[in-house]
Image 1 (cartoon, rainbow, N blue to C red):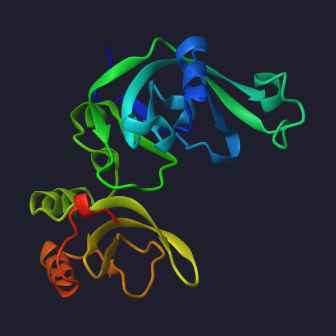
Image 2: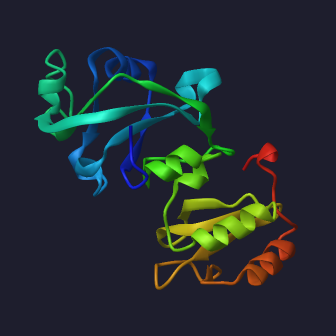
Length: 217
């Protein structure tokens, strides 16, 4: 049905009411000002469930074929909610086909903040957990650390005292985070820049060893 290189966009499904719109009316909204670059090229739209979904939370359970999109105002999506503060905000109305259950689901091993994940069909098909979906220059290091039992997190938001930034990888440890950035991306002074696996292993050991997802951050 889909090809390996087809673009897949994973979006957050905030609550069952919005899931009902996708399921019954066949659409999902994305604010234009926050939309990833690949939004209009996506062949597949998948949904990451938040805590509002109880037992199914923090995982991707459903996806659908994208059949088109249009630019609309929020007031046109929800005519009965004209007083909403974002009533005049532009959205992509993503038109989708019937929902397909992803078996098995793609879980997040830890709670983490997710907005959108742009990936490909081959990654989506093969993913065992959420971090497998991400694309970055740290692919090789990610695989090495994962196989070593370090449970790395990808595209991880770091809230620094001065500036927030996104680390390509982090390894949660018992005494803190080992942060990895690629190239000249912004980072805090304690981040490792383009390290080899051994440098990461030493940093992890200095912080008490990797923290299992079962212990959660």
